[in-house]
Image 1 (cartoon, rainbow, N blue to C red):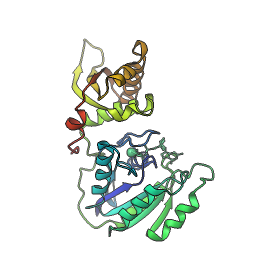
Image 2: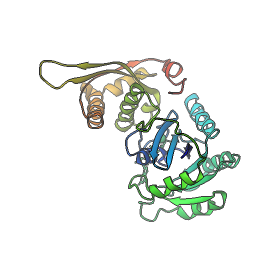
Image 3: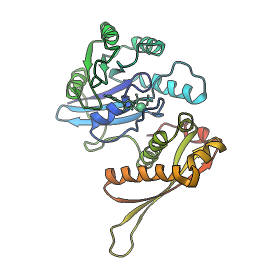
Image 4: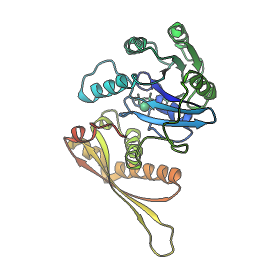
Length: 291
Ligand SMILES: Nc1nc2c(ncn2[C@@H]2O[C@H](COP(=O)(O)OP(=O)(O)OP(=O)(O)O)[C@@H](O)[C@H]2O)c(=O)[nH]1
Ligand SMILES: [Mg+2]
């Protein structure tokens, strides 16, 4: 049996989290069209007769660490490179190779593990910069052109990772998909809806905390899972925007999160969601990595 860790690295927005979910076959990590969506290392686990791959999603690397959150995200990505067995460098051929790419390539070049270049988003017609990425190929042992969105060539990627993994026992039980605690995963799904609903600035000032989860049963009706959660923001103005006029925004966020949770968990959900200003959430929540 083979087993080991394969890290997904790349600049922000190349589709690392989308790829993780596609590889695992279920939603593990949150995704959005906005950069810097991922904040933690998320493990997505693939187990088959060949063994087990633990894919590690990382925050996208940002060129300038102009604030604490960005610096922390870059550090998280960098530290994920050590102690893994295979490095998968994810690239987006719809954007030119830039400064961030060079910073990352230097980071990756210092490592000794086998490296795979995964050129993503090949479902886009004639991705304009694809040849620039193909030219990076000599720095990697292998290039695979994939589409996380259309699940293209993912089997080839998984096979290539297995070929490069050492022999060993699985790290996780066979049916476990992720390292995330349920509570944390719930908060991530809600945070994703904040990214989708809100303009550019607001998602970065926010975090989501789950306060209560309870099975509620009344009479013969199917049980409802009651989830009480709070969106924390550092900025009072953002609180107003998150609530929206006539509470329209918060309702949209709650509705979208509830729909998705009901579909994935196959149970009725009552989501009790509110917004609070907490200037110190970064200190309280952004610190420890999830298990
Ligand atoms: N066309 C196309 N779009 C994709 C593909 N994979 C991801 N995307 C889109 O790219 C955007 C970013 O995807 P994410 O998975 O959140 O990117 P990420 O690399 O995890 O971003 P960070 O967490 O911010 O570093 C989303 O809008 C995805 O839908 C793909 O294969 N094809
Ligand atoms: Mg991500």
